[in-house]
Image 1: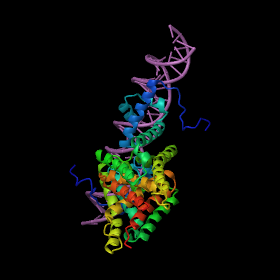
Image 2: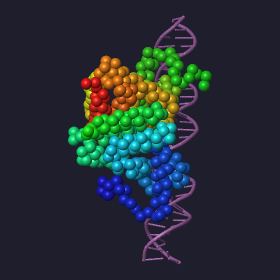
Image 3: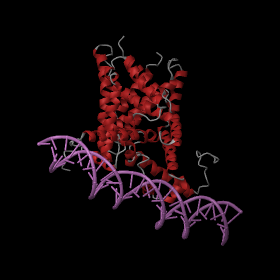
Image 4: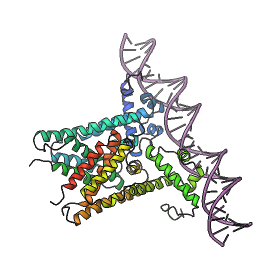
Length: 210
Length: 210
DNA sequence: CTCGAGTTGGAATTGACATTCCAATTACGC
DNA sequence: GCGTAATTGGAATGTCAATTCCAACTCGAG
């Protein structure tokens, strides 16, 4: 506990090539873990996919858990980035629908295989890995934040009733997304996802003033 | 491959003690897999927990996948049974709230560790194990059915608007439960779960006639 | 150029796990 | 009571994963 916290993983000097290798490993690991889970993805698997040797992985991440943590952060950054700029402008019912719909289409495109990149990791790691859970908390917070902000802006503008609990509604929408994704993944149909988010957005809509 | 399909696992004659051993194995496996996931639970783990030898497990389930399938069915039966009779009487807003609230309390009691027994398995197994996915589809169907029936009864009685899509609402509620559980598990607080189900039930309530 | 840190390859180590085997035992129908 | 089938113990097998080691190599700063 004297080390500068295992959170930052103290960034040692990295060569240009080094940083590149590191990225390649994370991306390969993220892809594999999305399909097979973190536990179902072995270091040799990742070596092959990234075209690196075992020593490189251990050099950059210490151990498998370190890599998993890096993957969580990477998926969070990637997912959020790919939802922008929509994610930062969720201040109308139409924007909410459009944003959710896009995720539904994305799900259809991949045949509803695989759920949410973050949600799947969360379900697998929340109980067994304390440091992973912490990262996942902030992943969901970073995701929920923009939703809440959008709703808050609607409320500030007087479009949403004063009585609406925007924080709770944002949480409910995120939950609908997660649960909807899971059901869709199992049923191999995006219908459940669409119905789930649609119900919550309809509910939000019922708080519109006028 | 001449066996009568691996689905039914042709019930060979079981001794009284045999059936008991089989049950003990399933229960121990279910418990362990709930906490550590199916992949994170080893046969030796289960042996120790159930107090049986390896040959017994392979004798009754063939291989690990067979045991996993049995665990899915067991958890489905157990979860649904423990929700009855409430589950079969979800034909009022109050009943829905009471039923959901009970799951929230249960979550609190265990400190929000572990999510939904079925949802967690679903997230882990949906993509990699075709036969598991099939069982999970029916698990969710068996769960969603009573919800839909309750809503349909309300509608038949004229309490719920004709325009309400009871099937979609049932799916949305199940999704809220799943997503809410996941967020609660990660955040170690049942708040997200409660907000998620509350939003959907409020939405259902908005379809009440008069 | 020259040194030290960053980087890489690949073999070696250790341990766990899924599964198989076979021999011993027990239970139940007849 | 007998015998066949169910049940059980426990060791053996083979595979594969996580991690360690160390030697070779490369790159950038001075």
